[in-house]
Length: 272
Image 1: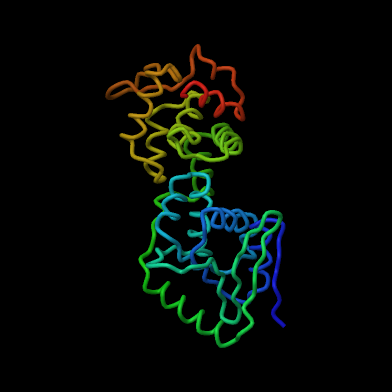
Image 2: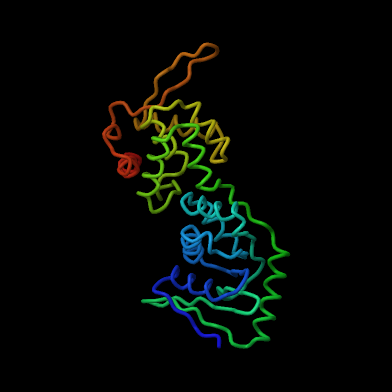
């Protein structure tokens, strides 16, 4: 018999739902909080994750894309072919997880989150067909963000293992990575890590462009802004042919003595 499910929080409820549904799942109209909880659960349990077709409001997907912490984890799931994102056309009314034989509506309360099960088999079959067709007809959504696994692996190879460790520590210290006063964005984080490790601007910007974080021009522009604010410094490094390249460093700034997990907080105070 199908029964209602419950979790202490959204992630707990999602874990219960995905454990109860046999086979692939269509997630319809998730809130930003539900999408983040799904990504958190999927990142920690990728091997056990079914293939999930997410049909979400475009504003929700754009909100996710703007936060590098969530977007890069979601991109990992997309690259692992565990998740596909499409834009919801119209209104769905409720956040539901739909399988071939199961349907659960997610209902948050003050102290727990319930997953209310549909018991009418005919209704479940109709809902599955309806939302599967809507997903197949929907426009695909591009996160335009590299998966965090690829980011870490390539930073380790192109910039160095110490820089990769600093990068991980900075991300772990943040709740969001958006810029605009809501945490540092991914370009600023990369440049701070490069300065801490005294890497070349050319190397970090080429890495960032190659991996799909941002263009070399964006890295250069952000470097200039950080330099103008006295957050980072540069020195010229001669090369055999062509113009000298710039080495990033902190110089005499509060960031010079900051540990990796303090870097974001110190930079954020200086920036704001």
